[in-house]
Length: 425
Image (cartoon, rainbow, N blue to C red):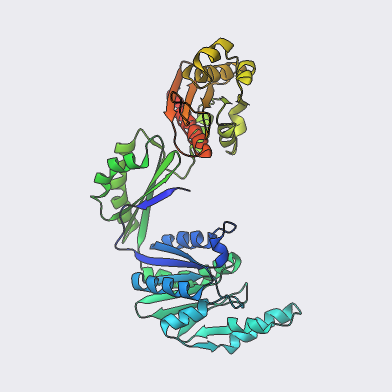
């Protein structure tokens, strides 16, 4: 998971909040994919999502969340809690907050009964509560389930109640909600840019670009950090696409100049995809010898479709014996310099390149932790070398965090070193 920070906002964009309802969403076993889907759809309409809330099946907490959202944001979308059981409380709470009555809709009840009859099943009595609607609401037809959605206009707010199952929510939203939301949003055109960077910490990156983006109040700048990578996303709104493009491109040009050495793509590609594309374009091949990363670099490289064109072999030289037998590291070198050293990293990179006969060889050795460190070589110490046809480059790093985080950052750094070496071939 990464750290997200929105550095500036678009005051001209209509905003929305999403409240996902369901105690199961507060466990580690379920992921709220509905909110991600709705955010993507809303953004395409020119509507920014300013807050997402997950609430269990609890009337008190749901009421508090709903009242807060209505005070802040014009569009509030609830997801889930429209089922037939006692813990499905969304309708009841929304009716109470909006001072509306719940009334039984005979047409909806007949449609629910018809669905059960078609399957030769008697409708349970509690399913009748799914035919309750708020007075003054518009019913959103559910063609894939029993619970209809509701659209309620309330003073300055629009409240939308959607069912939880994605197979019901998605078609309902696309068929009935998008046309209504499009009218609310008006003719707003959006333009976006992305820069994916590595090798620069989030705080350092932000210190460099904050003076730039703070001058562009009409462009939303979002900084998203994760291990070994920081994304900068820019969004501008305008009356026309050309107007939005001009706004975002001006800022994008300035940021690109400032971060040029650290940007590895301006698309949604991962670093391993960028490296793979470069290897393919240059008809180059690669082999790796990994110690502390335990095959993570090879796994990331081979996760890319078409990697068989350039990835030839991967060695996991975890023990000193394997470094000697598989990568031809001299025993005396290990004894004098230690396994975690520049000399061994260079030896791994050059050794695997020569053994396999590839354009590039990569060697990684380090201490992933949480044990095994020393005052001279603390946990997180990693040496990486990348060997090419003309030279071998080395980088020593001290990565912080858990064992997995250290290993991921080491693989990320190795990929970036490979990318930069490929630029010189």
